[in-house]
Image 1 (tube, rainbow, N blue to C red):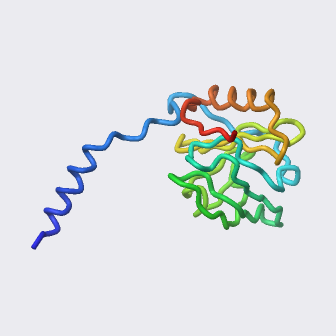
Image 2 (spheres, one colour):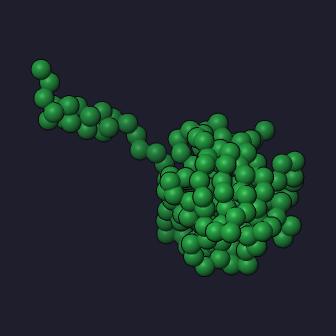
Length: 166
């Protein structure tokens, strides 16, 4: 019969054998959300152009405007694998800071950048656990993608860890 302490010791030993996930963001870098954010213009269908979640690039999410914020549906691209997204989101801070727990791993969602026509946006969490670039379907222009990558790099995210839609 295996006792609980033995199981715990085995689990800890196995955990020590695995290498930790590399950091996705340099926490010493400052991070900021967009201050001039138009909730109505942000509403609608978005496609994930790049994400830290394997298998998520190309997924879609919908941000339907509600009186309290947004009703979210589609795919949550913030965990270790794509997951169903079904949550209510609300603005929770200055600028484009959004809370949608339990979606997005319970992390706050910050819009770090959105182009002036709301064709592309950079979403991330200040903890650095995840980031993604989203575009309106069919509007992933190379110059906007390059600008989004620059925003992520400026905010300390490791671009090598992003999985890009092809």
